[in-house]
Image (tube, rainbow, N blue to C red; front, top):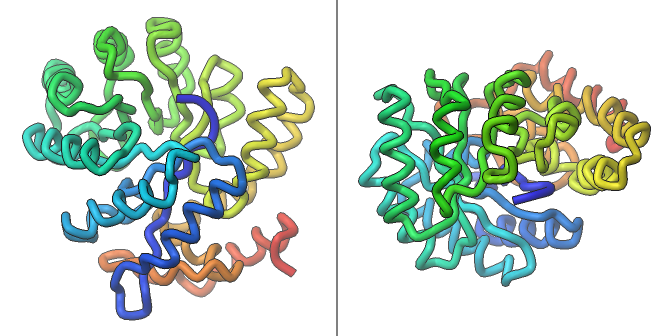
Length: 291
């Protein structure tokens, strides 16, 4: 897995129900932009807040509209191995190209438990897997030696690293070589991750400026480091603004400000504080996408 993958937001109507028409529009927005892949039903998608019926309906819609033109890497991970395998099989039946599977949260397995969990998912799930390490959300960090062991399985093809620890990411690449693709899980670290051997990003800010993120990735591929660095520093304040409050609150507010009409977040997330909303508007204006 290489390039720009979008941690896709889930649009809702005013009554809080799934906005299927808008979701279809978002898929085509990213096809037109040249985005490499979409990751529905993950953190940015607000997956803890919807029913399993909604979960698989979202995957179904994204797969339908993608129509083979863009990869669909469906969020399928839970803190239950059995449930995660069930999710993987359903996503495979729907037609997803792969699945992103988060480290089990709350029950906090050991590194041996992580290995056993992901190996079983790889053996029985029927889809190529992107592992997702996000200690700030799960209270658990997957260590490089665990990723190295997992990378030997043919169905484990990528890891989204959102630990924020560049040294840890470098160690993963050192240990695993080309046996697994490492993608940045933080927009602010995409350039450093590319520099140590990462293959791309699972992006939040790409929901609003996918072409710009792609321009940075393509500049790096062409070894134009000055251009890559320029894009990094142009995108940095905007990327930082996506986390003024809990993701995906700022990115959805930004999309609504820009006329993309994705609706509000669902409880327990709420609208941003007025002072933070002003900071977000300022970031959009400074970037040049808001008059």
